[in-house]
Amino acid sequence: MQLPMPCFRSGLYPLTSALLLFILVWCHTTPVSGQFAEGDPGDLGFSHERLQRLDSYIQQHVENGQMAGINTLILKDGKAAYLSSHGMMNIEENIPMRKDAIFRIASMSKAITSVAVMILYEEGHFMLNDPVHEYIPEFNNPVVAIPDSTTERGYRTEPAKRPITVRHLLTHTAGLTYGYGVAEEAYNKAGLTGWYLAGHDETIGSVVKRLARLPLHAHPGKEWQYGYSTDVLGYFVEVVSGMSFDEFVQKRIYEPLGMTDTHFFLPEHKSDRLAPVYGTDGNGNLELTEPTSTTDYIHGPRKCFSGGAGILSTITDYGIFLQMLLNGGEFNGERILSPQSVRLMRVNHVGDMFDSGDAGFGLGFRVIEDLGAFGELASDGAYGWGSAYYPVYRLDPEHNMAYLFLTQLRPAGDLPFRNRFHTLVYQALNE
Image 1: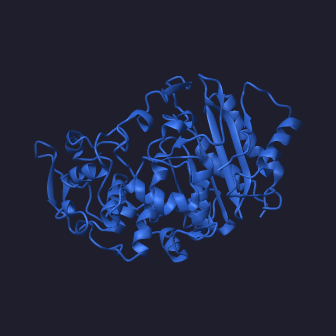
Image 2: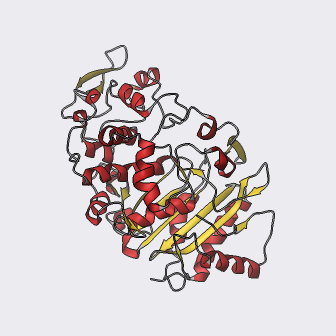
């Protein structure tokens, strides 16, 4: 996939307003890649002037040293209304942010894994309400940890009231956290605390089988708890398909869609495109927290395919994936899912369990159901998620729009950029 030459901004290069506008328009009207058509923002329902507000807002955070570099993409009516690269990909080596930079996308991996599950669902391999133990026997007869101060470990266990189903895993209602809760010590002893699995010198199947022996932190179907559910789904795909998870997503999602730069672990010849991770120190300054010279995504065991938080991608590759969903499961003549499956994925399946009723949760995404209850710029039916490295994406069927930004910022401190980014996108719409 041939990309245009990078269009970037850095605080090292102050721009006049005229030059800034010229570069901004150049970014907007340059095709994202061979996969996307050019689109003039005005023709797509955006205000050029108001998009410049977004551009200035992003640049401000780079110049203030709150983010090293960031790639941003807005897709509208199947075309690129906005594509920009700001700041530096690598501060130490003075490398400007590249449009083909590769990012750790952490929990944005969950959407890809959910689509993989739905592909197999459409082929008739299982029903969403099937018990998971029918496919992964280790999950038969799970127990739930119940707080009990009279015991030495602080909890007792009782049999789960129902088995974990595939839909429980997709909706994060399986009782699985990232090890946190009353049984946290047991998870610590099992080496299963936290979402990061890239450094594990074992397969995802080994991780999941060990996880299945630990107590749940809620009865299945009773609470929304964020955790290892999507990693279990990655292994579930392996069991049902008979393929390794990386092979399945490569053959069934990446290759048909032309996502040539999406991987669990990087091929050596792409290692110079992986953006380092920067974080905010105690004084609010950026510091390098994960250099490419030591990252597990290049130098690690390369064994554990984490469907919950282990995928790497680019702004254009993930944009293609989002456009496929926005199109109802199809992109450039390649159908990945049926429109009915995508519709099922983007409706609320958990009632008011998620986010105190301000939004719901579908099969892999947060779903905005009631704009008034949500209380910020969005649309009813918009859905999306984010990443531990700070990126975020949203799909908006009402406006036929998808947008995201990618950066590598961990920890981010109390930076409010991510939430305000949504506002800056919506305020630019003339529709």
